[in-house]
Amino acid sequence: MSFTTNAPFLYALAAIVILFVIAQSLFFLIRAYRQAKMLNMDTRQINKIIASTALFTIAPAVSILLGVITLSKFLGLPLPWIRLSVVGAITYELPAATSTATALGIPLAETIADPKVYSAIAWVMTLGIMPSIILVPLLLRRIQKGLVSIKNKDAKWGDLFITAMFLGMISAFLGMVFADIRSGLPGFIPIFVLLFSAILMAVCGLLIKKCGLKWLENYALPISMLGAMAFATVITPIIVG
Amino acid sequence: MNKIDNNKSNKTADNNLYAAQSHLYGKIWIWTAAVLLLFVPIAICVYYDAWPGFQPVFKGLLGVAPIFWTVGTIEVITFTPMLGTGGSYLGFVTGNLTNLKVPAALNAMEAVKVKPGTPEGEVVSTIAVATSSLVTTVVIGAGVLLLAQLTPVLNSPVLQPAFENILPSLFGGLAVVYVGKNWKIALVPLLFMLVLFLLVPSLASSVGILVPVGALISIGAARILYKRNKL
Image 1 (cartoon, one colour):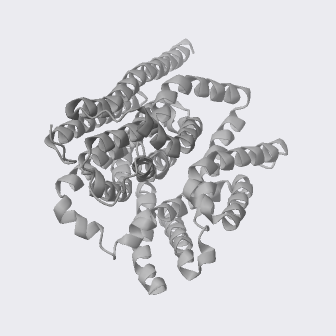
Image 2: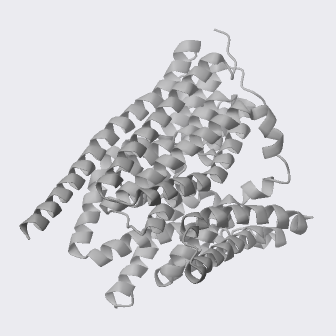
C-alpha cells in the first residue's frame, strides 16, 4: 500500500475520532443541560454561559489550529488533526514527534515518507498521553471521596482547599510570564500583555459593579483575553522594532 | 414540614442518581476513547503493514514519557476537583485543560456564582467543558477544510504576537478575579513562582510540573492562614 501523510485512509481515521469527540461532547452537554433544568437553574443564564464559553474558546482554538498547521508540515494533516482534537496539545505532540524522529535518526525538516517512522510517531504520541485517560476512571471517585471527607469535616476549609489548588495553578503561569525578563525589553512583552488583560478585567468589573452592566459578567474573560491579544500585536512591533 | 423534607430528600436522591450515572457513562465514554486512541496507530500499522518494532517506540517514549506521564498524573489529581465528574470524563478526552477547559469551567461557575463540587457547579462545569470541546472541534475542523486560505492569515507576522501571548492574555484576566478575591492565599505561591522563574527561566518549558508545586504551597499557605483565623 503506497503511503502519503495525507492519504484518504488517514482522513477516514480522523473523521471517526472527530465524530467520537463531537458525540461525547453533545452527550454530556445535553445531559448537563437537562440536569440544570431539573435543578431549577435559570436556563437563560445557562444559555449565556454557553455563548460566553463559545466566544472565550475561539482564540485558544485558533491557537490549537496553528499547532495542527505546524505539525502538518512533516506529519500531513490527518494525524495532527486527530492528536490535537483528543487529549493532545502542541506542547506535547511536537516533542513526541521530534523525540521519535531523533531516535530513528530522521530530521523533522520535511514530510515523512516512511510509514514505519510515521506509525512509530503515532504510537509515541498515543502512549505518551495514556495516563491522563486511564487514571481518570481509576482515581476520580477516590479523589472526590477525599474532597467530600474534607468538606464534611469542615465545609469552609473544603472550599478554600479547591480555591488554593486553582491559585497554585495561576501562580505557576503568572510566574512563567516573568521567565524572559532578563533578555531585555522584548522579554517584558508578556508582562505588559498580562497587565493589560488584568486592566481590562478590572475595567469590566467596575462597569459591572458601578454601571450595572450585568451582561458583562459572562463576557469579561473573553473581552480581557481578546483585548490583550490585540494589544500584543500592537506593542510587539513597537518594542521589537 | 414533612413535605419540605420529602422534597429535599427527593432532590438529594436525584443529584445522587445523576452523579452515579455520570460516573457510569463517563467510564464507558473514556474507556471507549482509550480503545479508539489505541486503534489509530494499530490501524495505521495494519493498513500500511508498517509495524515500527518495539525499539523505536521505546526510544521515542523515553524522550517524552518521564515528563508527560508525570504531568498527566499531576493534572488528574489537580484538575478533577475543579472540573467535577462530567467535566473530567470529557475534558481529559478532549485535552487542552490548562489553557482552555479549566479556565472555561471556572469562569462559567464564577459567572453563575456556583462552587465546584456542588450539584449546580457540576452541571455548569460540564456545560462549559462540553461547549468548549465542541467549539474547538468545529474551529479546528473548519481550519483544516479552509487550510489553504487560512494559513497565510494565521501565520502572518502581524498576528503572530497575539498567539504567542495567549497565556498571559488569559491568566491576566483570571488573576484579577481569583487573586483579587484571595490575595492572602495567593501571595506566597506567587512570590515563590516569581523568584523561581527569575532564577531559572528555563523552567518555563516545564511549567506543568510546577502546577502541583504551586498548589501545595498555596494549600499550605491557606491552611496556616485559616488556622490563624486570617481568612
